[in-house]
Image 1 (tube, one colour):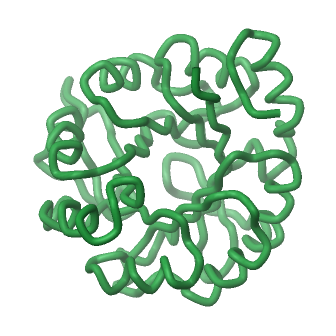
Image 2 (cartoon, rainbow, N blue to C red):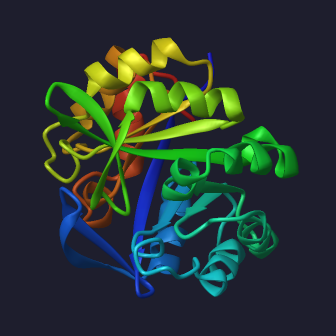
Length: 251
């Protein structure tokens, strides 16, 4: 069985790592390059960097930060935010990123998924989906959760897989920052629908939540931010706990 992955997520705004609750009330959580190096040393399997205002403010992801991170890391990392065309992705790849994450641009132009997969390979393309429960349905949201779409989450993810997305980063906005646990019901449902890996995001508050999402939803990876940034959960401790619960992890 493949090892389950633990992925710290660094939301970056103006060159600093930030964290909020339900996508708002952001507070500073440190220098992203320093944090990245620390997580690599602690045993993180991968990292995700999301330039959370890049799309909203119509600017590109910071190439220089990617270069700095690439010099520090020996683990794969994904960059997202403001990627709207092949040239954006190519620049990030050349700067040292292993994968790129797209969200708003893919919804507005689904063919971008197909183009990126053909240009760089399926494994390079991570589709980030921000979902919120609205009137009994799971609805896709854009621009850091500011904008609701008419897309139902399940339908969009299936379409994205068909177009060539290699991985889904699914964030429950209802759970994000609450530390009340992952949305195991939705994650499990979607995991049964698709054949590509799912990264669970939104809601991690303690080590039991990680055990729960792997056991109940059988996701491939679990992502968290504040519990790692503020030292509430240490990655070596988390991996030992998962191992005790018969969940395969890379120690």
